[in-house]
Length: 385
Ligand SMILES: *Cc1c(COP(=O)(O)O)cnc(C)c1O
Image (cartoon, rainbow, N blue to C red; front, top):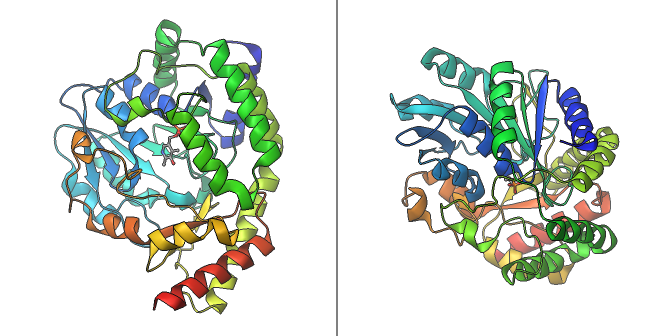
């Protein structure tokens, strides 16, 4: 482990407020490290919300464990704690609490059930950097947590992931697993990723994001760029080089991003109120988030009537709206049967997948962006009605 990576890990751990952090090539690798360190394997069950990214489920499947999906509640899109306990069996080994869009989960209820049933909780903080629940930062509640620094996340290093934990025994096991098996990214992969970060900085701003995303996706499928997901990751078999370390250049980028983190968070909080206000004034009902939650949103979710058409029309209107999650195991291409999901398992999540689009609140989106986005959605929704 090089100095820059170690420094990024320790600065990140300190910022979250935990004692240990481990950096990885991607967020999904960070989850894999935790599951492996918790000894998850054949016959074990891992509880997840049925409204997630398939890349979250892959590590569970790689280890031979079975994902058990719990439906979400419709306001914060997080795991419905009233349904959680009924899904727990003697085989349940982990509960993954995903803080969707940045809304923190009902951590008191989850931790109470988990403690009583003696099941470790892993927090998925990939979309929730800096969100708080009852004044505590997400990532500090569970046995461990993980973060992602992929393009769409609260801040990006191109791709990248981090595991954090306060449990020194678990940290020791992760350390050992990393020493034994973690592989280093190839020179080519690191170089291409650095190039992509440069392109991203130069060209991607709200107007062109949809176009750029499409180009990226296409190039990824062609194997030209280091995508966040390669085609082989749509099947539950682990690639030889999956368990990969974070590169120096990602760590350097991460350290730079961390210097701007407070401004990033302040901006996201401010933008959330801007959207609340604009949407309310345009006649939308905005989500009633409990006072116990102080979310830092990664994107602002809104339910609309005709998601597919809105997504198709947005780019030409110069509006950046996102589609996740497109189905309970995003994206829509996921072969659901390979991941033990059958239609109707999580009806609330399925409805959300059909209705929810998400609006930008990243540092490049400002009040003007929000006004334009809300105007587009309002006009569009009225035309559909
Ligand atoms: C992006 C994401 C991940 C995976 O992160 P990667 O860095 O792309 O592997 C996991 N969970 C959620 C909720 C995410 O949004």
